Amino acid sequence: MLKIDRLEFPKKYPFPNCVKLLVVLLVFTGILIHNCSQTNLTKEIQVSNVRITTYSKVHAEVEYLLTNKSAFKRDVRLLVRIFNETGEELGSALYMVQTLPYSSKPMVKIIDKLSSPLENENIPVKATLEIYRRKVI
Image (tube, rainbow, N blue to C red; front, side, top):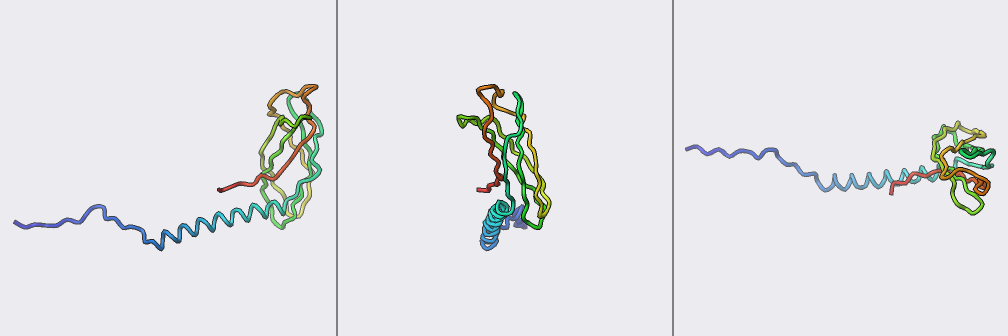
């Protein structure tokens, strides 16, 4: 009787170790480039003159000046927080703004999601605005 050896199906082809090492190096290089670009973004974008203009029981308006010192149009993520006299956070918002190259523009953000209604003893005193840096690790 004739005996035929069959090939194994599916044939397994493992990745060589040099390819695995190359992938790991590329991932670390990508993380490094991302972190450097986030650091450069905070150097090129400047936020100043942050103040609370008006408020009611359900909202607060924060006015600020956003300056782009770079030669590129940027999409910037901003995190604004409102605090009362005791330092308790009343509300916050994370949003995205587009800036033009070499421009300085006054802007207003309305925060309408507050942790509690604003009353006489719970009025907003201080507002902070910072550039939100995305983190990979």
